[in-house]
Structure formats: structure tokens, C-alpha cells
Length: 361
Image (cartoon, rainbow, N blue to C red; front, side, top):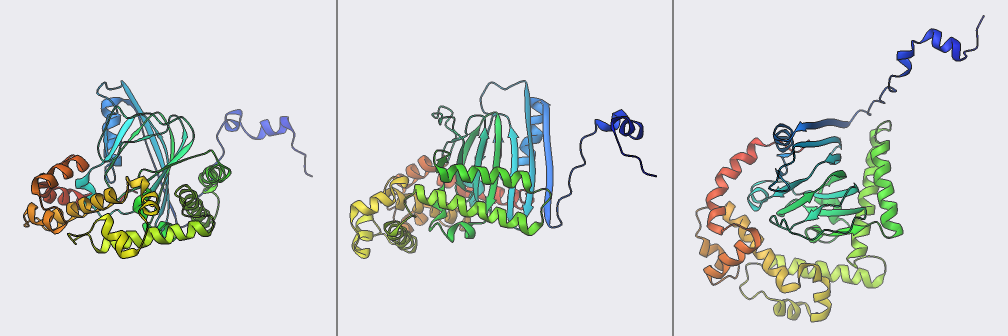
């Protein structure tokens, strides 16, 4: 004879202490890798542990000269094949990818940092600038090309971080490298939908199948690329399609002719029969076409300094259109905060360190 359960019978069957236990955590589906890590307490110990955990991708530095007494940070990682989602809770720090690191590593993913709470991070370019201006405290997303040097300053807050293979981004965005340092903020219906989807992805990844989680991740990537494409004026209508095609055409021409000493904005415009004003607008985020060409040549020079350590710096510079070795060295140092010769001499040590570091998992 069965008896209906009521409050009294429930308490008689299960001790009161059992009622206070948290619900059992749902299991992740097979094929979804998961790991967690956290530190809390004395800043010297916990910050050092956080530095070590983040070392496969970033060199973590204190956010200011005046150290805090405690440091608190944690992460949860979910990886599906070559897609990774991190849920960070972090204290103030600087995350640095130096030119030496990106020149000796093979990480070429595009990362999207979704600032959910606390002040948004500060993109400080290729080297630390501790006096950089604050971005308004609005939920937003920062895109970074992991194949370019950068420094990002983070504060107390929560961040969702997505690592996306470059090829997935470039299916829809013609030049993933130009995303580096771009922001979008949750001020439009599309960006608000995007943030809601990313939060839902994090909340629902536990308890769904691998294929469902993967499809949700790919939808997030499509929304991210759509939002950044719209911001860059590369999507939405026929004119945007033309802009995207021209942008890709110019980029490919520049990349093919980086070693041509005559490469210049004028030679690009003449060869492709384009107007100066239209091309400038396409490369405005880069500071104009001339700045884009110079930056691509400097980045190529960095790669060649590492790949060909026995070549003279002046020969590498001349091969990329820098006929004056002194002006090349000044431009290189301004861009990367390191002299070309220093990078070349330091490269073997960086390469040995890179071989020991595992992928960020």
C-alpha cells in the first residue's frame, strides 16, 4: 500500500542536512572537454599561480605598480573540437602578447572577449600604456587577432572568452587581422541578441549533446562576425558587398606585393583602378592605406627576423621597401617596443619556450 509523500514523510526519509545539499551537477556530454581553475588569497601566491595557468597564451602582469593585498580569479573552460569557451572571473591584471611570442608561436585563432560585468577591458595596442582612456561601462565585445601583439588591461569583472579558428571567421569576414582591437557594444538589437545568445550558450552547454553545443557555438560565431561586419560596413546590402569585395582585393594585392619596393597607396590605386577616398574609408580603422602597408611590412619583417636569424637586419628591411636601416629600426621600435636586432637575438630563446608551452586548455 503506497503512501503519498508530504512534508513530514519527506523529512522522515531524508535527513534535514541532506535537503541543504546542492543539486547534483549535470554531466557534460561525451566530446565536450571541461576544466576549471581558481585562485584566491595572498596576492603573491595566487597571482603567481594565475600567471602560470595563463602562460600558454598570455604573459600576465600586475595592473599597477601598487600591488593589491589579495588576488581572486577563476576560469571554467569548455572545448568542442577546435572551439573553446572560457568563463572568467578576474581581478585587475595586464594580459600581454609580445611580438616575440606571436612571432614564435603558431596560435592564429581570433578571440572574442565578452565583458559581462565590471568595467570593460582596455585594448592598449602592442605594448602597455597604463594611462589609456577608459571605455564607457557598457557591455561589449573586444576582438583580438592572436597572431598580432597586444596588451589588454582587465579589471574586477566577469568575461566570456571565445577562441575561434581563423578559417571560420574568414569565411565571412575577408580579413580577420583587421578585427584586431575592434569593439562592439550592446547598443543595437543585433548586439543585444548576440550577448543573450552567448550567455545562453554558457548556461546551456551543460546538459546538451555535443552536436547541440557545437551548433550553438557556430551560431555564436556567425552572430559575432555579422556584428563586426556591420560595424565595418562590410555587410547588409549591395553597396556593402562591393565594399567587402574591394577590401579583399586591396588586401590581397598588398600581401602579394609586400616585397615590391614600389608598393605604395598610389601604386595600389593605379593598379586596381580605385579612388583614393573610397579606399581610405575601407582602411580608416588601420589609419589609412599607407599605414596599413607599413604595418603589414613591419609585421612581415618581424616574422623574417625570426625565420632567418642569419640575415642582416638591413637586408630584411631593404627587401620590404625600407631603404634606410635607421628609419626602419625607429619604426619597428615604435610599433613593437623592441629593436629588430633584439628580436632576432631573442628569438631562439622564445622558440624554446614556445615548444615547452602547451595549448591553452
